[in-house]
Every structure is written in structure tokens, then in C-alpha cells.
Image (cartoon, rainbow, N blue to C red; front, side):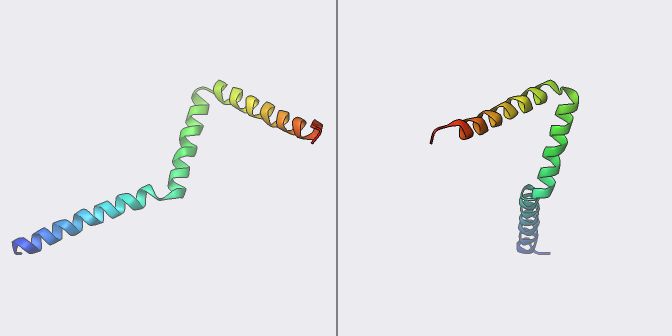
Length: 73
């Protein structure tokens, strides 16, 4: 192989690796699965913050619903 052919082959290999990395980063189902796994592991290691967060969210939703029902708009 000549020097030019080897440089072209190297450039193609670099481009292929770059495109594979981009494809991996844009794989939404894979990223969602990773996020789900991390959230599950976080909950299993310490559920208290998750319970507190869910309680606060439920209270906030109940407050918004009550405000919407009871407001004089």
C-alpha cells in the first residue's frame, strides 16, 4: 500500500469510529435504559430522597389542583 492509501484507510477508520460514537450517543432507548438503571440503583441504595421527592411532588400537584378548583377566576 502506498502512503496515500494508508492515510486514506486511517482516515476512514477514524471517521467510522467517530460515526459509531455519535450513533451510540444518539441511541435513545439505550440512554433511557442506562438512566433507568442508574435511578433504580440510586433508589435501592437510599430510598429516602426518592420518597421525600415523590411526597413533595404529590403535595405540589394537590396544591395546584386545589388552587385551580378554589380560585375565583
